[in-house]
Image (spheres, rainbow, N blue to C red):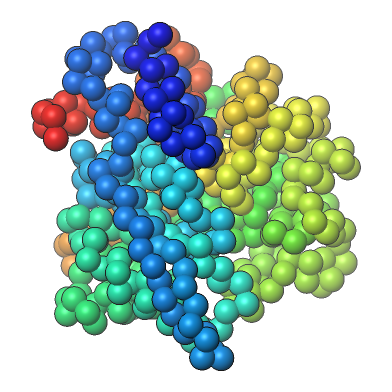
Length: 451
Protein backbone atom coordinates (compact mmCIF):
# COMPACT_ATOMS: atom_id res chain seq x y z
CA UNK A 1 0.00 0.00 0.00
CA UNK A 2 1.37 3.43 -0.96
CA UNK A 3 1.81 6.18 1.63
CA UNK A 4 -1.12 8.03 0.03
CA UNK A 5 -3.48 5.06 0.32
CA UNK A 6 -2.32 4.51 3.89
CA UNK A 7 -3.27 8.10 4.80
CA UNK A 8 -6.68 7.75 3.12
CA UNK A 9 -7.42 4.53 5.01
CA UNK A 10 -6.27 6.09 8.26
CA UNK A 11 -8.60 9.10 8.10
CA UNK A 12 -11.53 6.86 7.16
CA UNK A 13 -10.79 4.63 10.15
CA UNK A 14 -10.33 7.52 12.60
CA UNK A 15 -13.41 9.50 11.56
CA UNK A 16 -15.75 7.01 9.83
CA UNK A 17 -18.76 9.36 9.80
CA UNK A 18 -17.07 12.32 8.07
CA UNK A 19 -18.05 11.45 4.49
CA UNK A 20 -17.58 14.88 2.90
CA UNK A 21 -14.16 15.24 4.50
CA UNK A 22 -13.20 11.77 3.23
CA UNK A 23 -14.38 12.79 -0.25
CA UNK A 24 -12.36 16.01 -0.27
CA UNK A 25 -9.23 14.40 1.17
CA UNK A 26 -9.37 11.39 -1.15
CA UNK A 27 -9.88 13.59 -4.23
CA UNK A 28 -6.78 15.62 -3.34
CA UNK A 29 -4.55 12.82 -2.08
CA UNK A 30 -5.10 10.45 -5.00
CA UNK A 31 -3.81 13.11 -7.41
CA UNK A 32 -0.71 13.59 -5.24
CA UNK A 33 0.78 10.12 -5.93
CA UNK A 34 3.33 11.61 -8.41
CA UNK A 35 4.55 14.05 -5.74
CA UNK A 36 5.28 11.20 -3.31
CA UNK A 37 7.40 9.53 -5.98
CA UNK A 38 9.28 12.70 -6.89
CA UNK A 39 9.66 14.09 -3.36
CA UNK A 40 10.73 11.36 -0.95
CA UNK A 41 11.57 14.14 1.51
CA UNK A 42 7.81 14.81 1.83
CA UNK A 43 7.22 11.16 2.73
CA UNK A 44 10.08 11.08 5.24
CA UNK A 45 8.81 14.24 6.96
CA UNK A 46 5.26 12.85 7.22
CA UNK A 47 3.82 15.75 5.21
CA UNK A 48 0.90 13.71 3.84
CA UNK A 49 -0.12 12.50 7.31
CA UNK A 50 0.23 15.97 8.78
CA UNK A 51 -1.62 17.93 6.11
CA UNK A 52 -4.90 16.03 6.64
CA UNK A 53 -4.95 16.88 10.36
CA UNK A 54 -6.08 20.37 11.43
CA UNK A 55 -3.81 22.47 13.62
CA UNK A 56 -6.83 22.78 15.88
CA UNK A 57 -10.62 22.46 15.76
CA UNK A 58 -12.77 24.52 18.12
CA UNK A 59 -16.37 23.60 19.00
CA UNK A 60 -18.41 26.02 21.13
CA UNK A 61 -21.99 26.76 22.11
CA UNK A 62 -23.76 29.88 20.83
CA UNK A 63 -26.66 30.91 23.10
CA UNK A 64 -28.85 33.75 21.79
CA UNK A 65 -32.34 35.20 22.32
CA UNK A 66 -35.01 35.37 19.60
CA UNK A 67 -37.56 38.17 19.16
CA UNK A 68 -40.05 36.39 21.43
CA UNK A 69 -37.56 36.25 24.28
CA UNK A 70 -36.84 32.53 23.89
CA UNK A 71 -33.29 31.32 24.52
CA UNK A 72 -31.86 29.37 21.58
CA UNK A 73 -28.61 27.39 21.46
CA UNK A 74 -26.58 26.56 18.37
CA UNK A 75 -23.17 25.02 17.79
CA UNK A 76 -20.27 27.12 16.58
CA UNK A 77 -17.13 25.79 14.86
CA UNK A 78 -13.75 27.05 13.74
CA UNK A 79 -11.27 24.65 12.16
CA UNK A 80 -7.79 26.11 11.72
CA UNK A 81 -6.33 23.65 9.26
CA UNK A 82 -2.93 24.87 8.09
CA UNK A 83 -0.98 28.12 8.46
CA UNK A 84 2.28 27.12 6.76
CA UNK A 85 2.20 29.99 4.26
CA UNK A 86 0.17 32.59 6.15
CA UNK A 87 -2.60 33.24 8.70
CA UNK A 88 -5.54 30.83 8.65
CA UNK A 89 -8.08 32.15 6.14
CA UNK A 90 -11.55 30.93 5.27
CA UNK A 91 -15.21 31.80 5.50
CA UNK A 92 -17.93 31.45 8.11
CA UNK A 93 -20.97 29.43 7.00
CA UNK A 94 -24.40 29.69 8.67
CA UNK A 95 -26.62 26.79 7.59
CA UNK A 96 -28.46 23.91 9.30
CA UNK A 97 -26.18 21.39 7.54
CA UNK A 98 -23.04 22.72 9.25
CA UNK A 99 -21.17 20.24 11.43
CA UNK A 100 -17.53 19.36 12.09
CA UNK A 101 -17.39 17.15 9.00
CA UNK A 102 -18.54 19.95 6.67
CA UNK A 103 -16.21 22.52 8.22
CA UNK A 104 -13.25 20.13 7.98
CA UNK A 105 -13.89 19.42 4.30
CA UNK A 106 -14.18 23.14 3.55
CA UNK A 107 -11.08 24.00 5.59
CA UNK A 108 -9.04 21.29 3.90
CA UNK A 109 -10.02 22.53 0.44
CA UNK A 110 -9.18 26.06 1.54
CA UNK A 111 -5.51 25.16 2.13
CA UNK A 112 -4.90 24.48 -1.55
CA UNK A 113 -7.22 27.15 -2.87
CA UNK A 114 -5.43 29.82 -0.85
CA UNK A 115 -2.02 28.54 -1.90
CA UNK A 116 -3.03 28.82 -5.55
CA UNK A 117 -3.77 32.54 -5.22
CA UNK A 118 -0.02 33.22 -4.66
CA UNK A 119 -1.02 35.28 -1.60
CA UNK A 120 0.27 34.42 1.92
CA UNK A 121 -2.82 32.77 3.37
CA UNK A 122 -3.31 29.49 5.19
CA UNK A 123 -6.49 27.42 5.23
CA UNK A 124 -9.35 27.41 7.72
CA UNK A 125 -13.15 27.48 7.94
CA UNK A 126 -15.88 28.11 10.47
CA UNK A 127 -19.59 28.37 10.96
CA UNK A 128 -22.69 27.31 12.84
CA UNK A 129 -25.76 25.11 12.35
CA UNK A 130 -27.86 28.29 12.78
CA UNK A 131 -30.47 28.86 10.03
CA UNK A 132 -30.66 32.50 8.88
CA UNK A 133 -33.91 31.95 6.93
CA UNK A 134 -36.83 33.85 8.41
CA UNK A 135 -34.74 35.63 11.04
CA UNK A 136 -35.20 39.34 11.67
CA UNK A 137 -32.32 41.82 11.54
CA UNK A 138 -32.41 41.99 15.35
CA UNK A 139 -32.18 38.20 15.65
CA UNK A 140 -29.31 38.11 13.18
CA UNK A 141 -27.49 40.77 15.18
CA UNK A 142 -27.95 38.94 18.48
CA UNK A 143 -26.80 35.65 16.98
CA UNK A 144 -23.73 37.19 15.29
CA UNK A 145 -22.73 38.93 18.50
CA UNK A 146 -23.15 35.70 20.49
CA UNK A 147 -21.07 33.85 17.89
CA UNK A 148 -18.30 36.44 18.06
CA UNK A 149 -18.28 36.39 21.88
CA UNK A 150 -16.45 33.05 21.63
CA UNK A 151 -14.81 33.29 18.21
CA UNK A 152 -12.92 36.52 19.00
CA UNK A 153 -10.41 34.73 21.23
CA UNK A 154 -9.31 32.44 18.38
CA UNK A 155 -8.82 34.97 15.56
CA UNK A 156 -6.65 37.98 14.73
CA UNK A 157 -5.12 39.78 11.71
CA UNK A 158 -1.94 37.69 11.92
CA UNK A 159 -3.61 34.55 13.33
CA UNK A 160 -6.90 33.78 11.57
CA UNK A 161 -8.90 36.05 9.25
CA UNK A 162 -12.47 34.79 8.63
CA UNK A 163 -14.73 35.94 5.79
CA UNK A 164 -18.28 35.29 4.61
CA UNK A 165 -19.74 32.11 3.12
CA UNK A 166 -23.24 30.67 2.75
CA UNK A 167 -25.56 32.62 5.05
CA UNK A 168 -22.97 35.29 5.83
CA UNK A 169 -23.04 38.45 3.74
CA UNK A 170 -22.33 42.13 4.35
CA UNK A 171 -24.98 42.40 7.09
CA UNK A 172 -23.59 39.50 9.11
CA UNK A 173 -19.96 40.55 8.65
CA UNK A 174 -20.93 44.03 9.87
CA UNK A 175 -22.54 42.65 13.03
CA UNK A 176 -19.60 40.32 13.72
CA UNK A 177 -16.91 42.92 13.06
CA UNK A 178 -18.73 45.59 15.09
CA UNK A 179 -18.81 43.29 18.10
CA UNK A 180 -15.20 42.19 17.63
CA UNK A 181 -14.11 45.84 17.48
CA UNK A 182 -16.07 46.61 20.64
CA UNK A 183 -14.73 43.78 22.81
CA UNK A 184 -11.14 44.00 21.52
CA UNK A 185 -11.06 47.82 21.46
CA UNK A 186 -9.20 47.84 18.15
CA UNK A 187 -9.87 48.54 14.48
CA UNK A 188 -7.99 45.94 12.47
CA UNK A 189 -8.28 43.72 9.40
CA UNK A 190 -9.51 40.62 11.24
CA UNK A 191 -12.54 39.96 9.02
CA UNK A 192 -12.85 40.38 5.26
CA UNK A 193 -15.96 41.15 3.27
CA UNK A 194 -16.42 44.31 5.36
CA UNK A 195 -18.38 47.32 4.14
CA UNK A 196 -16.49 49.95 2.15
CA UNK A 197 -17.11 52.47 4.93
CA UNK A 198 -15.04 50.54 7.46
CA UNK A 199 -12.22 48.84 5.58
CA UNK A 200 -13.82 46.67 2.92
CA UNK A 201 -12.55 46.27 -0.63
CA UNK A 202 -14.24 47.13 -3.88
CA UNK A 203 -15.02 44.04 -6.02
CA UNK A 204 -15.07 41.73 -2.94
CA UNK A 205 -18.79 40.90 -3.26
CA UNK A 206 -18.33 40.23 -6.99
CA UNK A 207 -15.01 38.40 -6.74
CA UNK A 208 -16.00 34.72 -6.48
CA UNK A 209 -18.54 34.93 -9.30
CA UNK A 210 -16.32 37.13 -11.48
CA UNK A 211 -13.31 34.91 -10.81
CA UNK A 212 -15.19 31.74 -11.75
CA UNK A 213 -16.12 33.26 -15.11
CA UNK A 214 -12.56 34.53 -15.64
CA UNK A 215 -11.24 31.00 -15.00
CA UNK A 216 -13.80 29.45 -17.35
CA UNK A 217 -12.82 32.01 -19.98
CA UNK A 218 -9.17 30.96 -19.67
CA UNK A 219 -10.13 27.30 -20.08
CA UNK A 220 -12.23 28.07 -23.14
CA UNK A 221 -9.35 30.04 -24.67
CA UNK A 222 -7.20 26.89 -24.70
CA UNK A 223 -9.61 25.58 -27.36
CA UNK A 224 -10.01 28.85 -29.20
CA UNK A 225 -13.44 29.64 -27.71
CA UNK A 226 -15.05 32.27 -25.48
CA UNK A 227 -18.40 33.07 -23.83
CA UNK A 228 -19.88 34.95 -26.77
CA UNK A 229 -23.31 33.52 -27.74
CA UNK A 230 -22.86 30.53 -25.41
CA UNK A 231 -25.83 29.19 -23.42
CA UNK A 232 -24.86 29.09 -19.74
CA UNK A 233 -26.47 27.25 -16.81
CA UNK A 234 -25.85 28.76 -13.36
CA UNK A 235 -27.07 27.13 -10.15
CA UNK A 236 -27.75 29.02 -6.95
CA UNK A 237 -29.00 32.58 -6.57
CA UNK A 238 -26.71 33.91 -3.86
CA UNK A 239 -23.69 36.14 -4.08
CA UNK A 240 -21.59 33.84 -6.29
CA UNK A 241 -24.37 33.07 -8.76
CA UNK A 242 -25.48 36.68 -9.00
CA UNK A 243 -22.11 38.02 -10.04
CA UNK A 244 -21.29 35.03 -12.23
CA UNK A 245 -24.43 35.92 -14.19
CA UNK A 246 -23.37 39.56 -14.33
CA UNK A 247 -19.91 38.73 -15.70
CA UNK A 248 -21.25 36.18 -18.22
CA UNK A 249 -23.55 38.91 -19.56
CA UNK A 250 -20.58 41.25 -19.90
CA UNK A 251 -18.71 38.58 -21.86
CA UNK A 252 -21.57 37.99 -24.29
CA UNK A 253 -23.03 34.76 -22.91
CA UNK A 254 -26.68 34.01 -22.13
CA UNK A 255 -27.55 32.61 -18.70
CA UNK A 256 -30.86 30.71 -18.71
CA UNK A 257 -31.11 29.19 -15.20
CA UNK A 258 -31.08 30.18 -11.56
CA UNK A 259 -32.31 28.39 -8.44
CA UNK A 260 -32.58 28.34 -4.67
CA UNK A 261 -33.39 25.57 -2.21
CA UNK A 262 -37.08 25.59 -3.17
CA UNK A 263 -37.18 25.83 -6.97
CA UNK A 264 -35.42 26.35 -10.30
CA UNK A 265 -36.29 28.99 -12.87
CA UNK A 266 -35.55 28.52 -16.59
CA UNK A 267 -35.55 31.72 -18.65
CA UNK A 268 -34.75 30.86 -22.26
CA UNK A 269 -34.67 34.56 -23.20
CA UNK A 270 -31.72 34.99 -20.87
CA UNK A 271 -31.22 36.59 -17.47
CA UNK A 272 -30.06 40.00 -18.68
CA UNK A 273 -28.69 42.90 -16.62
CA UNK A 274 -32.13 44.12 -15.55
CA UNK A 275 -33.24 40.66 -14.44
CA UNK A 276 -29.93 40.10 -12.66
CA UNK A 277 -30.45 43.31 -10.69
CA UNK A 278 -33.90 42.06 -9.72
CA UNK A 279 -32.41 38.79 -8.40
CA UNK A 280 -29.89 40.75 -6.35
CA UNK A 281 -32.64 42.90 -4.85
CA UNK A 282 -34.92 39.90 -4.28
CA UNK A 283 -32.25 37.85 -2.51
CA UNK A 284 -30.08 40.47 -0.80
CA UNK A 285 -32.69 43.00 0.29
CA UNK A 286 -36.06 41.26 0.49
CA UNK A 287 -34.66 37.74 1.06
CA UNK A 288 -37.43 36.29 -1.08
CA UNK A 289 -37.77 33.00 -2.97
CA UNK A 290 -36.66 32.54 -6.58
CA UNK A 291 -40.17 31.55 -7.73
CA UNK A 292 -41.01 35.27 -7.39
CA UNK A 293 -38.72 35.80 -10.39
CA UNK A 294 -40.84 33.38 -12.39
CA UNK A 295 -44.01 35.27 -11.41
CA UNK A 296 -42.52 38.64 -12.38
CA UNK A 297 -41.04 37.61 -15.73
CA UNK A 298 -43.55 34.88 -16.66
CA UNK A 299 -40.94 32.14 -16.95
CA UNK A 300 -41.03 28.41 -16.23
CA UNK A 301 -40.54 27.37 -12.59
CA UNK A 302 -39.80 23.85 -11.36
CA UNK A 303 -40.61 23.39 -7.66
CA UNK A 304 -38.38 21.17 -5.54
CA UNK A 305 -35.73 20.64 -8.25
CA UNK A 306 -32.25 22.04 -8.67
CA UNK A 307 -30.87 23.30 -11.98
CA UNK A 308 -29.21 20.01 -12.89
CA UNK A 309 -32.38 18.02 -12.19
CA UNK A 310 -34.25 20.26 -14.62
CA UNK A 311 -31.58 20.13 -17.33
CA UNK A 312 -31.63 16.32 -17.11
CA UNK A 313 -35.42 15.92 -17.11
CA UNK A 314 -36.13 18.56 -19.75
CA UNK A 315 -33.17 17.90 -22.05
CA UNK A 316 -32.11 21.55 -22.06
CA UNK A 317 -29.13 22.44 -24.26
CA UNK A 318 -26.24 23.99 -22.32
CA UNK A 319 -22.79 25.03 -23.53
CA UNK A 320 -21.26 26.00 -20.18
CA UNK A 321 -22.21 24.95 -16.64
CA UNK A 322 -21.36 27.01 -13.56
CA UNK A 323 -22.48 25.19 -10.37
CA UNK A 324 -22.58 27.94 -7.73
CA UNK A 325 -24.86 26.54 -4.99
CA UNK A 326 -23.47 23.93 -2.59
CA UNK A 327 -21.47 20.73 -2.20
CA UNK A 328 -22.44 17.58 -4.17
CA UNK A 329 -25.32 19.30 -5.99
CA UNK A 330 -24.30 17.79 -9.34
CA UNK A 331 -24.17 13.98 -9.57
CA UNK A 332 -23.28 11.44 -12.25
CA UNK A 333 -26.77 11.48 -13.83
CA UNK A 334 -26.61 15.26 -14.08
CA UNK A 335 -23.11 15.08 -15.57
CA UNK A 336 -24.21 12.56 -18.19
CA UNK A 337 -27.14 14.81 -19.12
CA UNK A 338 -24.85 17.82 -19.49
CA UNK A 339 -22.54 15.85 -21.79
CA UNK A 340 -25.50 14.61 -23.82
CA UNK A 341 -26.93 18.14 -24.08
CA UNK A 342 -23.74 19.61 -25.53
CA UNK A 343 -21.86 20.99 -22.54
CA UNK A 344 -18.22 21.84 -23.31
CA UNK A 345 -17.08 23.47 -20.05
CA UNK A 346 -17.79 23.22 -16.31
CA UNK A 347 -16.32 25.70 -13.82
CA UNK A 348 -17.22 25.36 -10.13
CA UNK A 349 -18.29 28.50 -8.32
CA UNK A 350 -19.25 26.48 -5.23
CA UNK A 351 -17.02 24.27 -3.09
CA UNK A 352 -16.99 20.63 -4.29
CA UNK A 353 -20.39 20.87 -6.05
CA UNK A 354 -19.67 17.89 -8.33
CA UNK A 355 -19.57 14.36 -6.95
CA UNK A 356 -16.48 12.24 -7.75
CA UNK A 357 -18.55 10.20 -10.22
CA UNK A 358 -19.63 13.39 -12.02
CA UNK A 359 -16.04 14.59 -12.27
CA UNK A 360 -14.98 11.31 -13.87
CA UNK A 361 -17.72 11.67 -16.48
CA UNK A 362 -16.60 15.20 -17.33
CA UNK A 363 -12.97 14.17 -17.66
CA UNK A 364 -13.65 10.98 -19.63
CA UNK A 365 -15.68 13.01 -22.15
CA UNK A 366 -12.98 15.64 -22.59
CA UNK A 367 -15.09 18.37 -20.99
CA UNK A 368 -13.12 21.38 -19.75
CA UNK A 369 -13.51 20.99 -15.97
CA UNK A 370 -12.31 23.58 -13.45
CA UNK A 371 -12.47 22.34 -9.84
CA UNK A 372 -13.69 24.72 -7.16
CA UNK A 373 -10.37 25.19 -5.42
CA UNK A 374 -9.07 26.79 -8.64
CA UNK A 375 -12.16 28.20 -10.36
CA UNK A 376 -13.70 29.91 -7.32
CA UNK A 377 -10.46 31.09 -5.70
CA UNK A 378 -11.22 34.66 -6.79
CA UNK A 379 -13.23 35.28 -3.65
CA UNK A 380 -10.48 34.46 -1.20
CA UNK A 381 -7.93 36.12 -3.49
CA UNK A 382 -9.81 39.40 -3.18
CA UNK A 383 -10.14 38.81 0.56
CA UNK A 384 -6.35 38.63 0.54
CA UNK A 385 -6.25 41.93 -1.35
CA UNK A 386 -8.57 43.39 1.30
CA UNK A 387 -6.13 42.22 3.97
CA UNK A 388 -3.31 43.98 2.12
CA UNK A 389 -5.31 47.20 1.87
CA UNK A 390 -6.16 47.03 5.59
CA UNK A 391 -2.50 46.49 6.50
CA UNK A 392 -1.37 49.44 4.37
CA UNK A 393 -4.36 51.62 5.36
CA UNK A 394 -5.16 52.06 1.67
CA UNK A 395 -8.21 51.69 -0.57
CA UNK A 396 -7.68 50.64 -4.19
CA UNK A 397 -10.02 51.57 -7.03
CA UNK A 398 -12.57 49.16 -8.48
CA UNK A 399 -10.58 48.91 -11.69
CA UNK A 400 -7.34 48.18 -9.83
CA UNK A 401 -8.84 45.40 -7.73
CA UNK A 402 -10.66 43.87 -10.72
CA UNK A 403 -7.44 43.92 -12.74
CA UNK A 404 -5.54 42.25 -9.89
CA UNK A 405 -8.31 39.62 -9.67
CA UNK A 406 -8.07 38.91 -13.41
CA UNK A 407 -4.28 38.59 -13.18
CA UNK A 408 -4.60 36.18 -10.22
CA UNK A 409 -7.16 34.00 -12.02
CA UNK A 410 -4.93 33.85 -15.11
CA UNK A 411 -2.01 32.91 -12.83
CA UNK A 412 -4.05 30.15 -11.14
CA UNK A 413 -5.07 28.77 -14.52
CA UNK A 414 -1.46 28.70 -15.72
CA UNK A 415 -0.26 27.17 -12.44
CA UNK A 416 -2.78 24.33 -12.82
CA UNK A 417 -1.75 23.54 -16.37
CA UNK A 418 1.98 23.84 -15.65
CA UNK A 419 1.83 21.59 -12.57
CA UNK A 420 -0.30 19.01 -14.38
CA UNK A 421 2.17 18.82 -17.25
CA UNK A 422 5.21 18.76 -14.95
CA UNK A 423 3.83 15.73 -13.09
CA UNK A 424 2.64 13.78 -16.14
CA UNK A 425 -1.03 14.81 -16.04
CA UNK A 426 -1.18 17.21 -18.99
CA UNK A 427 -4.48 19.09 -19.28
CA UNK A 428 -5.85 17.72 -15.98
CA UNK A 429 -7.02 20.76 -14.01
CA UNK A 430 -7.91 18.67 -10.96
CA UNK A 431 -4.44 17.17 -10.60
CA UNK A 432 -2.81 20.47 -11.55
CA UNK A 433 -4.69 22.47 -8.93
CA UNK A 434 -4.06 19.93 -6.19
CA UNK A 435 -0.38 19.47 -6.98
CA UNK A 436 0.39 23.17 -7.43
CA UNK A 437 -1.26 24.08 -4.13
CA UNK A 438 0.13 21.11 -2.22
CA UNK A 439 3.78 21.47 -3.28
CA UNK A 440 3.87 25.10 -2.16
CA UNK A 441 2.43 24.27 1.27
CA UNK A 442 4.52 21.09 1.64
CA UNK A 443 7.77 22.94 1.01
CA UNK A 444 6.88 25.49 3.68
CA UNK A 445 6.01 22.71 6.15
CA UNK A 446 9.30 20.99 5.35
CA UNK A 447 11.22 24.18 6.06
CA UNK A 448 9.72 24.49 9.56
CA UNK A 449 10.70 21.00 10.66
CA UNK A 450 8.27 18.85 12.64
CA UNK A 451 5.89 21.38 14.25
